[in-house]
Length: 424
Length: 123
Ligand SMILES: Cc1cc2nc3c(=O)[nH]c(=O)nc-3n(C[C@H](O)[C@H](O)[C@H](O)COP(=O)(O)OP(=O)(O)OC[C@H]3O[C@@H](n4cnc5c(N)ncnc54)[C@H](O)[C@@H]3O)c2cc1C
Ligand code: SF4
Image (tube, chains in turn cyan, purple):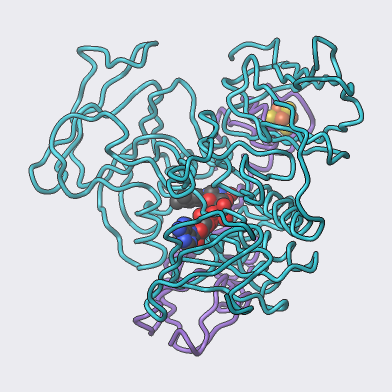
C-alpha cells in the first residue's frame, strides 16, 4: 500500500465529535484523515441554527454553525485532510490495523489503511416506523430533524398547521422555529407524564408562543390518503395505553416526530461489535476504545448527548487515546466491568482498563426524575464515592470525574446505583 | 403590562414554579428556592429578553439560506417585528462568520450577525 494511503488514525464522521478527535490525535503527533459522507463537514450542527451551543466549552451561547466553525478552523490550521462526499462501506481488521473500503464520485471504490479508527458517525432519528400509529402513511409525516433541514438549510416551509409528537429537544426547537416562520403549531403531544426535552426549551420554545404541551397524550391515528389531513390524539393511562373516549381529531397538514435519537452504528454492529442495549453505542473503556483493539468511538455514535460540549470532550478523549494506542503499541488491557444499577438509564464507559490509571470521566442519565437523589459508586460492596443531587432528570446527562486510585486492586467490577428521591 | 401569575424558573434543573404578585408596582416572587429564582422571576415578569436565531435568503441557488442571530438578547415582545426586519435582507456577496449584517436592530442597540459563511467556492 503506498504511504499516502496509510494513516495512523482514520476518523469516520466530521461532525463535532470527529473534528475534535482528529484535532486531538493530530496534536498528539498522529497522521490523521477524516472521512465524511456529506458535502461539507460540521455534522448535524450545520442545520442547528438556534443558539445555546458551547456554554461550557467557550462560555458563550453560540449557534450550531458557529460552534462547528471553531472546530473547522482548528482542523484547517492543522491542514487535516477531510475526504468529503465519501462514504465508508466496510471496515476490516488486518495485521497492521484497519482497512477502510470507501466510495466517492471522484475515486469510485478505494481503500485506505489506518492503525487506529475513531468511529464518530453521530446518531439518527427514530422514524414513523418505530412508533406505533394506525392509519394511512400519507405524505406529511416528518422527523423534526428533517423539518429542521428543510427550513434552515433549504429555506422551505413544509407545513402550515402541524402537530408535534414527542417532546424531545429538537421537536421543541422546531415548534418555535416553525412558529417564527409563520406556521401554526397546534400542540406538542408527549406520551410520558413529563417532557423529554430540557425545561429551558419547554419555556422558551412553547410557553413563549402559547403552544400547548399535552402530557400523557399521544397520536393514535393519521388521516388522509395522500397528504396528512388530520390526526387523532388521545390521553393515555399509566401503562401508556390510549384511554377510550378521550380521542379527538385535529385537522393539520403535517405530523412531526420528535421521538428520540439512536446512535448510528449499523456498519460496525454488522461486523459483530458488541453494543450496549442501554445506549445503543459500542461498549467502551475510559479511553473510549471499544471491545475491538484500536477501534474507538465518540460523540452521538457512542451515546446520545444533549450538550455538544460533551460531544467534543469525548472526541478529544478518543482522538488522544487513538494516537497513544498507535505510538505506544498494543498492550493487553486489564478490563473490569462498570455496572449500571438501580435507577440508571445509561452509563458510559461500561468498562475500565485498570492498566491506564488516573481519573475517569463518567456520563450517566437517571431512569426517571429523582429529587434528593444519592449516587453511590461501590466495588465488592465497599462504598468508594457518594454524591448528592437535588434533582436528576433523564433529559439532563450528568458528568462525573472519578479517581481510579479509590478502587481496590482486586476489584472485579465497579457498580453505580442511585437511591432516594422519588417523583415530583 | 399584565404580568403572568406563574412562571417556571429555568436557572437550574430544579425548575421551581414561581408565583408572582404585583403590589404597588413591586413584583413579589414566591415558590423560589434560592435568590436566582427571585431575580429570574422579576426580570421575566418585567423585561423578558430573548436572543433571536433565524436564516436569511441569499442570492445563491447552491446555498439558499444563511444562518444569522442577534448578537445579544432583545425584548421578547420585539421578536416578530425583528424577524420581519431581518427577512427583508437578501445576501448577495460573500460573508464571514460573525460579520454584522444589520446594525442596531430596531433601535435595540443589538446587531444581527452571520453565524455561517458564504465563500467564493459556494457561489
Ligand atoms: C436533528 C438533530 C438535531 C440536534 N440538535 C441539537 C441541539 O440543538 N443541541 C445539541 O446540543 N445537540 C443537538 N443534537 C445532538 C447533536 O447531534 C450533537 O450535539 C452533536 O452534533 C453530535 O455530534 P457528532 O459529531 O457525534 O454527530 P454528527 O453531528 O451527527 O456528525 C456525524 C457525521 O458523521 C457522518 N457520517 C455518518 N456515517 C458515515 C459514514 N458511513 N461514512 C462517512 N461519514 C459518515 C455524518 O454525515 C455526519 O457529518 C441534534 C441531533 C440531531 C440528529
Ligand atoms: S429558584 Fe433557584 S433552586 Fe429554584 S429553579 Fe430557580 S435557580 Fe433553581
